[in-house]
Image (cartoon, rainbow, N blue to C red; front, side, top):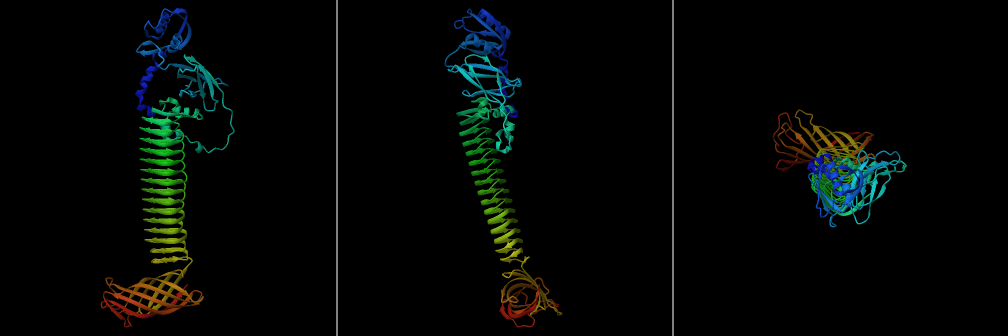
Length: 631
């Protein structure tokens, strides 16, 4: 608060002069049936000022009796004139004027507040009048001074409140200044128990609350934590300088206008501030601030701030800020900010931010962020981020530019520019580089490079596919199923004398990596990829159907020599890890240089067959292969 007061220090210049004003000076008067003029001269000599008045209204030759000691000039004048005159200060003069019924009359009550048991002065005790909404606090010596309006009723009621003490009510006669001391008793001890301190977080404990509210204002709210009232409106410059003065923090308003900032109990209407609004309890309908809003209870309606909104309970409606929004619990509606959004519990609606969106619980709806989306629960809807997403469950879509992490089930789609990670998939995982599902994939994994699955019950499409076990299909350059199908084949065929192939996958679909070469003087080499399927006839006999695509190297890498082979293979298991196989093939071969080769390499493919010539460099023929499989 001291930082804020620097901005408005000029408002307190007048207060300093008021503290030294003639009416505030103390005097001692001891007069028995003395003329009023003599008594006034005595007072003016003690205070170093002059009185001015019209003799037609004041009979200064009338006799008066008064005995007071160390009273303010205002108190003494009220006693002399019985509250029927008003007093104005101009320089070192006090002008005495007749009072009028149309103008308010005031009186001052002062005194000390002490501990009823120890007699020690009590500092920072709140002294207030509930009807007039006027309050003050005691100083280091327990002294208070409060100025009250004189009403038609003959008495006013002052309440003294202090944390850990019982409230004490004082009934005082109105109409003249007076001194009244109060002794208050400590509250009875309470039984201690384990308490969640976060449940009792107040607006005064937030960063902005500590900065903009003075320690005395925070203490006032603590003293008056059980006193709240309602008023139709309030205006304030800063906290404690406004329509309801220092007790404004305990008032719930329907309309609140804070030119710089306000500190009130709550709102059921409209609140507008040039800089900030701080409300201890619930706020309903509309709250607008140039810099920030802080609400200690529930926010219902629209909350807009230039920089920051902070709600210490839940939100139902629309919350928007230029920089950040924070809700302690959940929200239902829309939360939008330029940089950061945060909630602490389950929410329903949309959470939008330019950089980071953070949901502390389950989210039904949309979470979108320019960089990072965080959900410490399940997102039922969509989670979108320019860089990365994190969630504990997805029921819908999780989409990011680089990374998605979902530590539980993805029911829907997980799409990223680089990497997806989840526990299990019931839908699709699509990534530019890598997909990881440590448990079951019931759906599709599609990536530009690598797919990893614990148990595959769908399809994998990527350059490298891995599954711990599989009941689905893996399509890629290399697919490996740890508990699946593995076989190394060595065989010969009509094109290459020696061929080696590696099979990996499962019986539904396996992949083949194939390489071959001729063994004569004129060399030829081939390498390629294929896929196949098993048809079981008995535990030891089965037929496989394969299709492979191979490149044939004949000494010139600039030549395009492509060979596609369809293979029907009969397999017979000879021993536990040895299989004999043989079968017919049909080959389609294309070359853009059929009659050109290096002298050391073959020029004719196939060497010993007369193929079908389909024209345009395309040949075809029937062939065979035979070999052994291991493992």
